[in-house]
Length: 364
Ligand SMILES: *Cc1c(COP(=O)(O)O)cnc(C)c1O
Image (tube, rainbow, N blue to C red; front, top):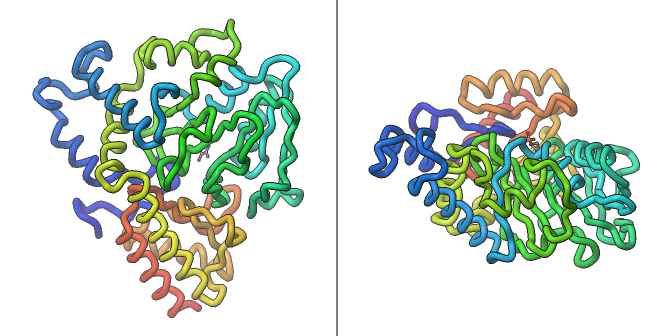
């Protein structure tokens, strides 16, 4: 077992946080750095909180390699509210937005956009298996599209784009909820990025949005205050009370990323974990059978099937008392899903792979 009698946590979201971050929160619990308060008890207009807030903003810019030409926003309502806020702000009358239909999350994003304006499916998997992604030439753009939306990592099926699928064309909007800051990333390639915090950034309740000022200038006016990105950008996300504790934890997670080699460090760590697990699957003689085409395999959510549903059930049942948590595939697809977000240590994957080998030697 890991330290503090914790489990090997492979939860898909909310998910594992870095142990060092939890220890830091614990140390600051009653008296955050001499303030005499927990962060939850502070005024969001006070100096102590302001420092935390601005530190998180600065870290996001630093990790993305962008400057003040990008606004860093903290919004509530999850990535699911972003599915609607993006078209509300940018899909105006008479224009079209291009979307990739790559999986369950992009499907939900498309549903919201369609309620607001005109959507073009720039690519969809004709069989609806969601086990692969389009190649560049397969994407059919609308000329003059308001933006192009895709999901960098489809959390449920386990496919991932490591680069935007377009080099040029409309402004690129990306749902990075489940792989943000997990590998090297050039923020300048994007007009808008959003990510619910609870997979790679912190607790649920806060959503990170990064938007280029040049793109924000195209946003429409006349929206309700809390649905307009301009409100958040104009007030440093302090128009109303932001989710202060979530932003505090996010700032600690971002510090942890920076202290562990930044995005390059995360990439190294995540590559090692993915290679370990996919390697074990590929060497299992089809006992652990990956569900996604190899070239599109996600480093964050590794999905596989076993020879029968009965064996999958036995596998999960045995895994739990050994401290392996969160391995059940999404209820819509079944099978096994291993989520390997930044905070999951390489050691956890080593332990899991050893268990997988041992299980196969008994049941295979
Ligand atoms: C989890 C997830 C969401 C939903 O996030 P909420 O914060 O629960 O709204 C959206 N997109 C992706 C890619 C996700 O992984």
